[in-house]
Image (tube, rainbow, N blue to C red; front, side, top):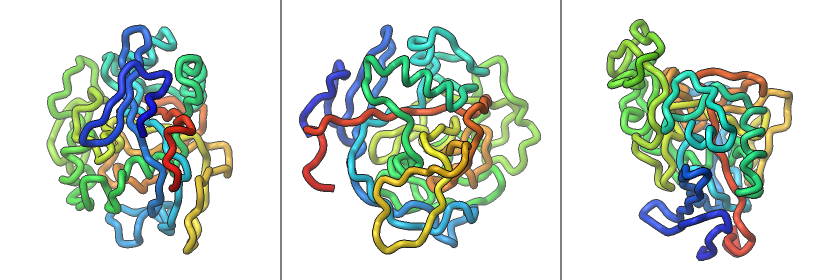
Amino acid sequence: MSVTPAWAHASGHDTHGRWARFRVEGIETCMRWIPPGAFVMGSPADEPGRLEREGPAHPVALSRGFWMAQTPCTQALWRAVMGDNPSRYPSPERPVENVSWHDAQAFLSALAPRLPGLALPTEAQWEYACRAGSTTATHAGPVELRGLCDAPVLDAIAWYAGNSGVGFDLDEGYDSSEWPQMQHPHTRAGTRVVGLKRPNAWGLHDMLGNVWEWCADGRRRYTVDEQPVFDPIGTRGIKRCSRGGCWHAAARYCRAAFRYWHHPDNRSHYLGFRFIAPALAAQQPKAC
């Protein structure tokens, strides 16, 4: 793939793959290329922390690649586009939170003249990107749940209830002193600056932890099928999917397969989003 997106002011290739950057009011955001392909969506029955809603594991194929924001949408980018900041934990490089699904859609509409085709990822696109070719509970490997808020594999890749208060640097924080079985004891927690934890193989940071991320679609019932389901979209009910866990979440929720749903009007200080952009036809490989 050699075509640079029209919206990019810079692009290139590194050890994680293709990247492209755009600017809005001086705020630079990096997007990562996610190639088309197939994966097994959901979790196996013996995965620690698994809930029934994550199964059955089944093959899914995504017929088109897409660009995905390297991190959750930051407060700096939100302010540059929307002119305000609804976040409880104000800091330009932290993820924006306290935004509903409808708020995220308004942001995407406002940014669309500069980046046409912006959208929230579908649940399938999100999990595919989170896994980045891995088949374990996290992109860093299997999960061992030593306690409610204690899973060692998460420490290097995610801000979750077991570590989100370590070195917390804002005056206002959530009282975490009584959270049970923390990997690293702390007393005050909240969101953290994006991109500090190790990325996955496709260069995406904070896919697990920090903030829950809104997805475009609603509920989809998983079914067993030997043939891949192509480009699935959940259409059941009004609620919209959120993925990834957050700084406030127990360890079991910060796994690639965990699924949750919120009413699209809901706002909370642990709910944010990241976005995707389509590729030009010339950027798509000839075969999936």
